[in-house]
Image 1 (cartoon, helix red, strand yellow):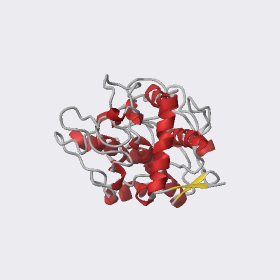
Image 2 (cartoon, helix red, strand yellow):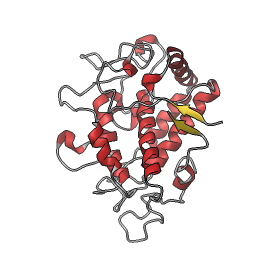
Image 3 (tube, helix red, strand yellow):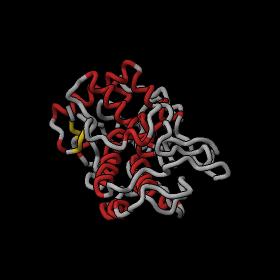
Image 4 (spheres, one colour):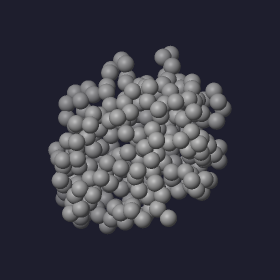
Length: 288
């Protein structure tokens, strides 16, 4: 049966409790940290000169769709009524937004060390110990809006600009692609300071703390963020039914991206599925 992913602001109190309980149970069993490690292991920048599947690459969107679906499947094994809600950051764009409530994701980090002190994922609750990270901190951190270098969440107008793209991706298939839906949504851009980060990337920067870098999965808001990214892609697919995943074929020998990106029918590590196989989610889930 097809299930529904809801806007987090529309969740009932019972739905919030169930989602939190399932996430905490995955953490207790160690399964959650395996998802963190998977993301860290596949966070490869395009300057590293090797295969990229998760970021700065055409497979950014299908890779995260599969990653999110595997996480959601793990949650639903614990509670079949749970799905991953989405956070529309163009609308719920302040620290007062409902997702930061104490009964859901908790709030911002404290000023001294950015440690989150409220909600079920606060280290002080004894149930959220950071074990797989790029830092030595054992507690969840956040730094909403980065006050020392202020940044705002993406606006509806900025997202509309992304949605006007008509081609999925363009050469050179990395963070420097000047057009194409994938890179516009992922959010790599020229410029200095925060101007280099748009849309998806800007959300990670706005939350700050552990949402920066490969260990961003340590913050459960990662899943709500990527649920919305997936929703945006899904809507773009509906508007552009003829715009297929690109590249269709692997870049040839001599191309700067030879063996560095995944084409339409090549498997994505570590899942072993191709981008083509996850383009249609309509028989699994839908968005409210």
